[in-house]
Length: 207
Image (cartoon, rainbow, N blue to C red; front, top):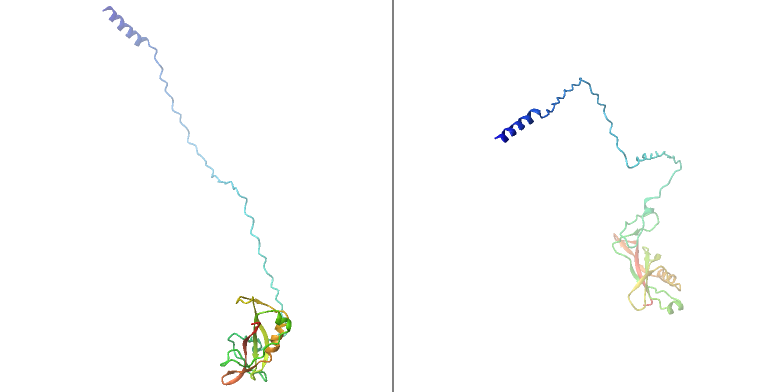
């Protein structure tokens, strides 16, 4: 019983003599009304690449027109027409005594006399095998007025293979043209009238 009383007394003494902790009360701080000024910020950016160079100025051309006082004489239309032997061209008109040449007659010139070229012995022995295409300008009387080489096919041996060449040896081309001027034709006909016209024929050498 005595122990119980002593325990109660100890508890009372502890509560009574335990140091009290002071309660600290913070005094509120009041700020006066102040005006805050915020300056406008300028945003800057770092550029990694150098600034582009200015565009080059395009020079303004200065007109350099000159007045030509010289009189220029243009040729007549008929002289500008090209007479192609193998193309369909326009028939030329009559100009004085000049013969009319038709590029597309109703009836083409027809051969009535063929003269073979006379080759030299060297050309004959060479064994050259060639087909020479010749363009003829046949007059309204059937006479060859012009003759020129259009194409030269040179064959290889006995085969049918050939190559186009610009010339042949041993004066063969001269012999061919000399013979071509001796050919005779029945002239071309257009609208019932004999006219000059072009035609192409072949000379065979070594066949």
